[in-house]
Image (cartoon, rainbow, N blue to C red):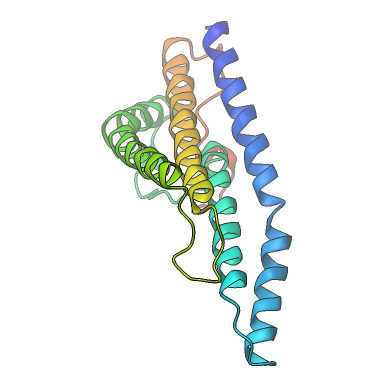
Length: 185
């Protein structure tokens, strides 16, 4: 169990580090949006480059924070029944959800994201706009990495829940809204 808990902690630490690093881009994104709005609506100047920077920064923030959001259980969850379940039943629901819903979806989407990123990289794809940003393949790589990190976080949550079911006293209860407070209800 120690080995499993060690793996879970390492994956979660990676998710937290990347998520927090990605969140540091938010002030830059806000300034970019503010400059874009002022240029467009005050000075009647529209810059494709600035719009694309805005989209790219937004993509970096979202993709880098997906796994962290899942890890801290701040994602959208329908808690009609889940919040009333015992910790063991919640662990089973989480395990089954990961195995039969989350993994099939995230593996398929990640696979296609890596194919798109690889193809884009081989073309050295840039913006289709004449004044747009070069190296669009980089942002497609960020998408693939973000989705892969989300899949890895799913593995950590799966392992955590399995460890909880095998040895309930050796690990903390699975993270659920009920365990974290009532802000989700």
